[in-house]
Length: 279
Image (cartoon, rainbow, N blue to C red; front, top):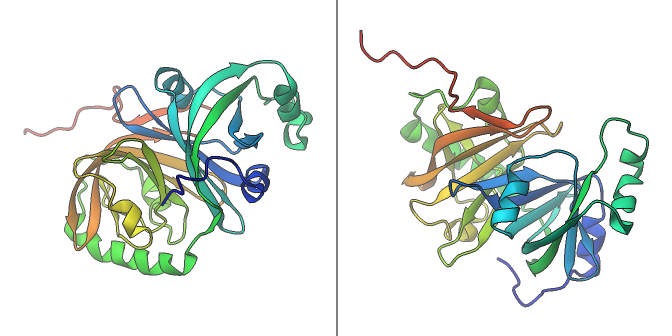
């Protein structure tokens, strides 16, 4: 749960956010009301109550922030420490000290192809303490999700590609869900235990982070991202429809490719031939 009394970035959080080698996610809301997750490793603290990140490509999350400035964020480091919180977009800049600092980072300084063209600024609204991921609970949670798969599986629409199913089937592969809580505001929760149930559904057991998942309202739209160690990813958007053997079932409505060079929806696709249903 969030520590809502802590509204400044502490030393531990500052040090963690300053790392370049981390998983950092930004949660926004797209034009159709679905939560959208974006991998933004450049997210870091500025002072004790602001955040920044650098942009080198255009996607849904940036346009969404301009329309709905409130967002959620999460950061996870290689030593399995993590934090999360909420923030509000305020402005962007294409010059200035932060712009120079980002583009002088060793990972970008000598890169002729990619550089940050815009720096985004966020006001901090809430932030958790730095926590340790309960990695010992994840295999049990994955097994519980697997037990629920036969009752939940559906593959009528072929929403997930074979590669997408592979990403969602990795036992300890990083996965995260973003949703709007019943009382309002976005939340991002690690759901490493999530598994693909056929091509059209995901199942997510309540271990770990069962208390957080209780805040997911029935019928809520969600975004769920799966990553691997090579930072390859797939994002699905769908609806929490029901439960099976204690696991939450997510009906997949859309699949989004968030990786370069071309981000965009890969399901449904307007150019995909219509399925033959009558003979």
